[in-house]
Image (tube, rainbow, N blue to C red; front, side, top):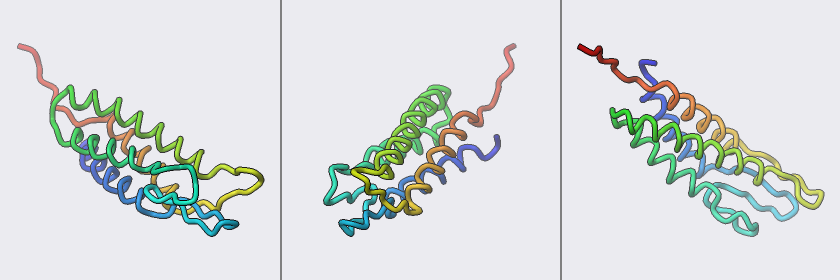
Length: 130
């Protein structure tokens, strides 16, 4: 794809921005959980890993080498798995109490899926052997 690298970098920026958005709201405790603030829960900072891996993946999108493209597929798969893990953990019901899912959680998943798709279709010039 012609614009796969640019779309991948834009999705990486969106993924990092999604980590600062609210992910869920726990009504009984009046807690808003985001990627970097989960005070009052045992989640820690679930979006921190997504930010670090997303930044590395954005760097790999910009490097026009075959090793970077192969590494990017692997790291984006890990990033997508971590985003799915965050979705399951942050949005799951615990002790009969279901949190309200917010937009940031969906944006995180969509951005991770887009990054993985763009990593699978890198723009590489094919050179003919002589």
